[in-house]
Amino acid sequence: MATKVYIVYYSMYGHVQKLAEEIRKGAASVEGVEVKLWQVPETLPEEALLKMSAPPKSGSPIITPNDLTEADGFVFGFPTRFGMMAAQFKAFLDATGGLWRTQALAGKPAGIFYSTGSQGGGQETTALTAITQLVHHGMIFVPIGYTFGAGMFEMEKVKGGSPYGAGTFAGDGSRQPTQLELEQAFHQGKYVATITKKLKGSTA
Figure 1 (cartoon, one colour):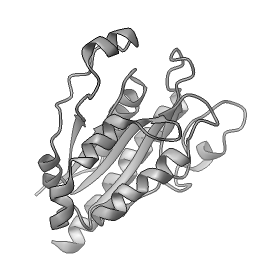
Figure 2: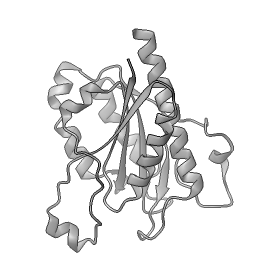
Figure 3: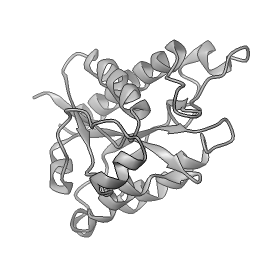
Figure 4: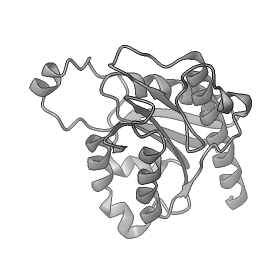
């Protein structure tokens, strides 16, 4: 039976979505792994999104809390808001109380990726504060550490991401994920999928 990895994200302007797509490719490159992209529900009204010049959402299906139980592992992605995950993703996690009561997600591995507006905008704190959500569910946080190799030590160019997970900088919205950031996202997908597959195999 295939190992199922769900990439679950929220993206307002498309930066997190682009990372999610690369993470999906990386996870899908692992033999025996089935990957699916999901987005969490939007909480803002359409009128507000239009005023914020937010583009239309992607075609990824909208996830419900119960959908999480079908996966063996996850990679969760979101933009930062004042150094923490966006409210839309937090609202989705707040709706997982039923899963928390039964500890339905306990023991499942999960990685985290993110987008911030600037270099000091929360590349580490966004992931660090998100770990509390995994802890209460009994999930296993899977950081990428320095497994990305030389790309982790890039000093000549601006690069998002950290040992916590893949990341990008949105700036004023015009900056898009660089090739190196996309490569790191691909690596994260492959890395988390490999660990998820190993964990599933050890319990089969």
